[in-house]
Length: 236
View 1 (cartoon, rainbow, N blue to C red):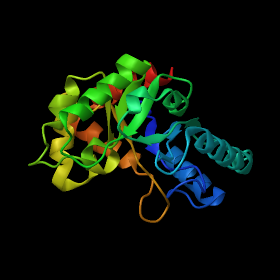
View 2: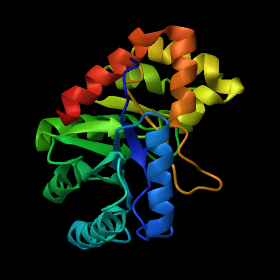
View 3: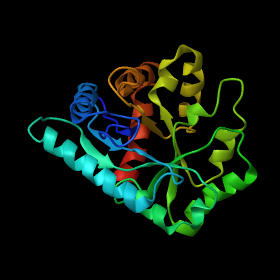
View 4: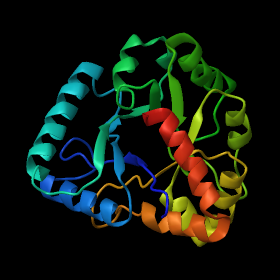
């Protein structure tokens, strides 16, 4: 029996960011996830510190999650939803006690969205300080957004030296132009977690199952098992 994988990056909560526009769309996205063998979905709506406060964001997230749960209460089986956030990097993030409320579930891991590269040395030091000062373990969101086959800015190597995990989007493995690079990074343990980064059912659909098939066919079940071990460390 194939190992299931958690979707670690999704915008599946309704009416909170640029993701799902309704509880009906969220339910359809969850059904699509389950049909692909995904049993857990981390809901990571955007948190932008310039537009919101953590307390206001958490109130809005709780309301969105409650509305979705009521809507899907009789619609089972569906993946388990774990609440988190996609926290946009900002100067001084390692000094902010409030980011502790934005972690994945009740754990010590926090999904961080970085700005476009190149990243300065001070930004890498800030990422490290999230761990040393706050005791939180950063997960770098969609690393594939910052690199390309012929221009990586040294990001994968620099992240290896930091107390961080790296998440890649399913599209990184699906696209023919980046598939080779994605598989190489996964094999080298420079990618630890996967996410669909799904936003809707039209243009940015749940597609993690397709990426998993690519990984299984090219690298075997052992690669899926290694991803699963990182998930268990974070969630279990």
